[in-house]
Length: 290
Image (tube, rainbow, N blue to C red; front, side, top):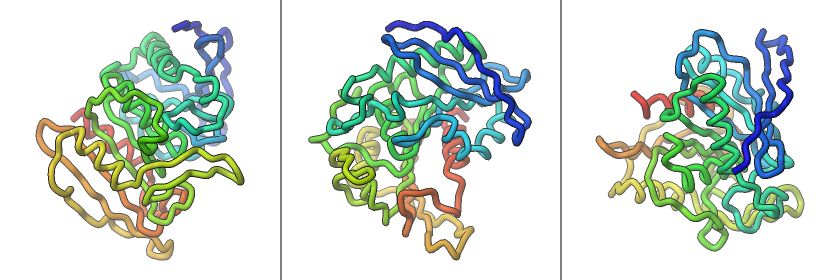
């Protein structure tokens, strides 16, 4: 793995948040890979590290706008939040059928994340035992890849509106190690079918088949050696007018990783109004280190 700290450090004023957005890059196998963050306070001491991953076609700065509340709360909880850019706006995740350049060129995402962790250990002395990732859609698939292939590096992950690739569409080699996973999926999602099926982005970008949400949940629960059914509770319906309700299914036992599904009844390929999905992810991550 080649690793070179980018020569330029861009400091952009973020007037709305009265913060500085720091953008930098590292050189991975001939490609400068870019990431962004709000400049952390000087009070940070061995902070936790959370990567927030954008969906297919997006970028880190765009993702930053969706996680403002989490970023603000994290700043008071000794947690550094980072927003990486995918390669040409896409990730090389585990979907064999993906026509994205990141997949075609087989860019080394594991090296990118390992390089960023090394960078933030040097620059901000982050705690390498407290590294997390939360991703939406294609970013959720990237979070799954980190859990599948780097489970000793990541303490926990959250995948939003994403199911695991079906076995015929999986081109990652799973490490087979259990870790805490939270899934947030909508039952009426036609892009990431809740009950499994082919994922089509736009008019003709076929990403191949994914498993159902139940099968995705079962994969992580089985890996953690849970048996039986998870406990279920209804999440308070904070927005009765949005046509959505949320059920929380939890596997949790002493000595085992926590596995959670937030089933958004009526949810599409979007975020529910009843919760802030990134605040939920942050709370989930914090539970894993308490």
